[in-house]
Structures are given as structure tokens and as C-alpha cells.
Length: 133
Image 1 (cartoon, rainbow, N blue to C red):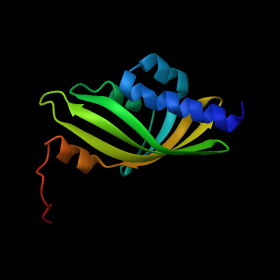
Image 2 (tube, rainbow, N blue to C red; image 1 turned 90 degrees about the vertical axis):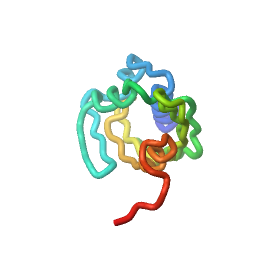
Image 3 (cartoon, rainbow, N blue to C red; image 1 turned 30 degrees about the horizontal axis):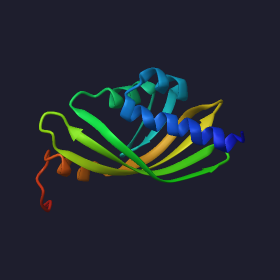
Image 4 (cartoon, rainbow, N blue to C red; image 1 turned 45 degrees about the vertical axis):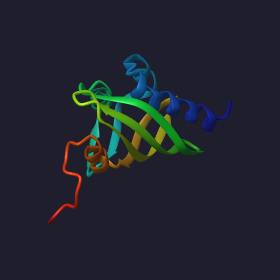
């Protein structure tokens, strides 16, 4: 198997953890000191991802990888995840675009953005109307 194919499989395994909430699998594919960039900040540590996966009150019901591209040690993914707000049963789809860098069979860096505002609107957590500035 070529490096890019292995890297694609690692990223797919990682993304599935958001649906399965399998923290052992997450630890197998993400470096402990992973660098994370996006949403206007930079942080380091797998515990940030663990917290997102295990967050109470919000469940990932489904995940659709719309596009995936691998080159060298990088994998780029555009995707959509369907979430449920457990308190209300409301569901919404959040789109995202992420880029991962891998080394030694693990994700060591990733960058990305997701439509957080659209997700919050869809889950009825912010008003569904125009924002006034």
C-alpha cells in the first residue's frame, strides 16, 4: 500500500471516531501532541479532539465525505456531518473542509474550518435570521 493510501485510511479512521466515539481508535491515529489550527486559533494536544468527540449533548448521527484528495504526507477532505442536539432532538448538517498532515501513521497537524454558525442555527441555538452589526 502506498503512503498516500495509508494516510487516507488513517484520516478515514479518524473521521469515523466522531460517529463511533471510539477514543481508543482516536488515540491510535492521532498524535498526542497534534497541532490544530482553525476557527481563529491554534492549540496543541489530542485532548482537544477527545473533548469534541465526547462532548455531552451533541451527537454525530452521520458523516458524508464529499471529496478527498491525498498527496505526499497531506490529505484534504470536504465533508458534511449530521448532528443531533440531544436535549431537543433537532438535527442539522455542518459542512467542513480540513487538511491533515501525517507522520508515522498518525495525524500530527490539521487545519480546517467548519460552518459553526450554520450548525448552531440548524440546532435552534441561535436565532434563524440575519445578524445585525
